[in-house]
Image 1 (cartoon, helix red, strand yellow):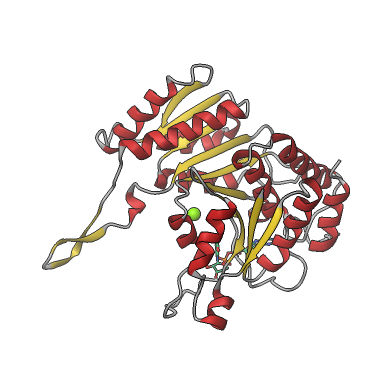
Image 2 (image 1 turned 90 degrees about the horizontal axis):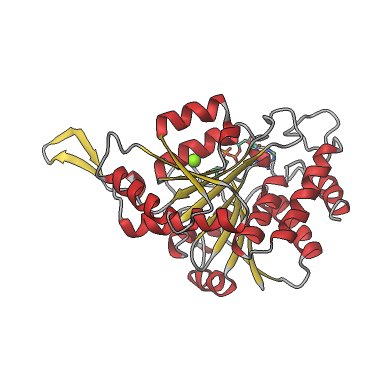
Length: 337
Ligand code: NAI
Ligand code: MG
């Protein structure tokens, strides 16, 4: 097994090595293949990412990615490498879990996973003026195909099957959009029939948002479209312990990309205070969902849980009594039983 590792910029240089240390303890046989990408790399070489890096990641089949700076002003020749990586490597699913953590912000009993279609819907980027002569009327296209809907539904239900999850909730707005969302819903319900042991239900997206605020413990796996998944997964993250604890996995048929939800955090970069938990948990997701090594993933998640339960944390959780990135990582490594 091989893992390609790209630290990127900012705290990527601190949180990614922490996750690699955890990996080398739990799965020492995994070969680490390093590559560079990001804003600093672009400043040095004129390229945000080398074209060969895509092949390298494809050959490894798995990538751990930190984060890259993306300035809010246009930089000639620069675009965020992760967006290109996801597209090139065809990771069509975005997975974001929220689990109750032993920190003050968590809500008890939450253990949900948002499985979001990541290639179509209104985010396919097809926006234009409706009339050539009128710049005050705009239209965005919502693209939904049966193939992509079935593919993401299969992923959600097979993840449920392999990870002993009991229910998949299909979230859509088929009452208002019977053609696009209706197609997604029909395809998902048809795929559900192949997984008779998994309970299936459906919610309109507004009702799902209501439940996400009122009682997120109602959810197990949420299967949804690109835009709804974007919003619902951020809502779900509010029940977790914040950005420092929020992992993500981008999954396709060939490649898995583990990356924390957070960015490069330039405000705290280089100070050894970043929380490595989100990146370590992203790696655990890759191990569980992409490599199928459930026990190894549980060892890592258990160590994180025990570290936080023992009252150890980094400064984003609470400034008083906080550990540095390296001390916190050592505490996690000590708890990898
Ligand atoms: P951010 O997620 O980097 O930071 C937001 C706030 O959360 C900051 O105060 C930061 O210090 C804190 N924070 C984030 N992760 C943390 C961690 N692990 N431990 C402790 N504190 C943490 O988002 P922001 O500030 O909007 O963006 C900073 C840069 O990152 C920008 O250039 C942005 O474009 C880029 N970015 C990159 C992403 C990626 O490469 N996937 C994703 C999001 C942002
Ligand atoms: Mg978002």
